[in-house]
Length: 237
Image 1: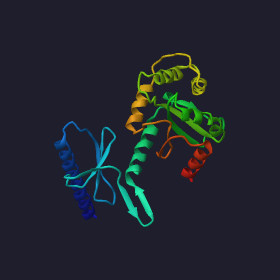
Image 2: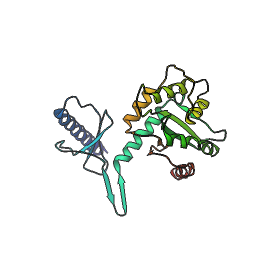
Image 3: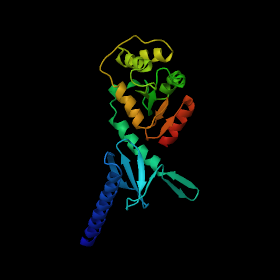
């Protein structure tokens, strides 16, 4: 079986050579571009290049041509967004790394059936509407985890309100009060609000609410709680 080892070694060396060529080509465009990874896209002639900014570009092993945008696989009666599949994997890793102690978490009293991460803005109208339905989600075992995304940016009024919510003695009560349009009691502490806002930007979030499901799928915008529950149940089936 030694010949198998030789074949694997050959392809491994070839892949490393391709990666080096691609990295060199990108550095030749602009040495300031930071590359996170270069990986072959299975069953295609393409390589996916992920930049430290989170952007994805595609090239072949020559590294002479690059395409920015989503890569699709067209099959009979099927269209797969390969780029989105790759993004989901990244989001799942981010979900695993998120410290729940740095999120504002609403946990159900019943057994947890789903976990839903929501990037939210205190002053966002549709965020408030979604929060008004949170008891229904909790009733069906959905744990809602809030991450901060003050749309006006760091230092804005929405940012300060989120800091006050996070630093409150009772985060959930403060969040519900703020989502009802009331001003939370001013408070400060060591907080993750700025970091979560930057994370949201890296994920490509531009508006709120933005929902991320356990499988890494991301949904911008509001959905009725019944639709959300149905979707989560489908993702689990």
